Image (cartoon, rainbow, N blue to C red; front, side, top):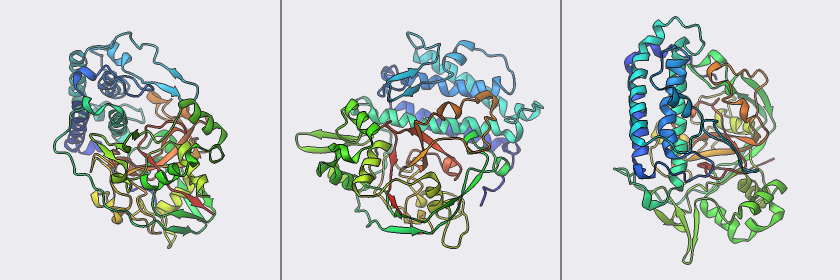
Length: 452
């Protein structure tokens, strides 16, 4: 079933103002983890330093709302342009497509925060101004632009966590209160038959308040029957793959994946650390024995997931198979979420910063799909082996952000579905598509296997 048509956000400015202020509070909490003396560092080579993102988020607000819709005069055009866009890396070639205005030295933190705060004030002024503007821009209609910039911030909150995950533990401040880790044993995984049937990909443009261009227009596909594991692969299961020696055997890897593994000298998943005493897991704020987090989902690249699936004689699901397993059931009806149509809540899954870490797989049974497949939303994005590509009636309808998706229709990026623990609940709609290169190792991405 399609998402219910939501009313214009412009009908309730107070709620919209609260959405912005609460989102900014979370962003500020994330940046506060990094001492300002570290804002010029980048723990992921493919990303700008933290200071760029302090400026990028308000620049996006200004450029999309105050600039594109309201045509307000900028108080800092240089920052609007400097912080406009990040890096488009090519992980395989080692090349980066840099913004042409990347400076030799970034502005200092104090100056960037002044810019951020002035933009935030302007955004709050714009909440009523957009409705009165008379703009014919489709992004002004129903206040779509406000949901777009909020979702942009939500996505960057998560990708900032990827950077923080790679930052040395002694360079991070621990937020308070920190949720307690859970190390309970995972339930046994089962192989579940999903009979052949139809699946909807994408959505109709007017079915919801907002969607990114790659979500439209909807298409229905017929999916042959398949079997899917009820749970994603855990650290413990992946360790068996490592311990068997198969991780270092070429026969389990695709040729392009094996070349990447050798080029990067990959010895383990990105969050695993080998020490004399054994293997450890680098959580966001602690180094934990790997055996202690054996029940947590393993976070790996698509290449590593493919190799594991080949080792067990299976494969990864397609985007269509994910939809069939997540949003349909034995009665043939479609639902908005894997568990049904009720609003996402903490009992349904580990998302929306319920916990600042993974949880044991299968620890949120209320989120189980009607087929009995667990954890399709939350605890880690679900890798698929579907190349990120446009739907047949794709149109880059956001004129001020026309390259949002099409720059990545290059055959190197693959679709991820579901959500991680750092994904905002707004992004749980079935049409939302995440994507990353198959050899990018820093995503909070898990996987499960399928077979015919």
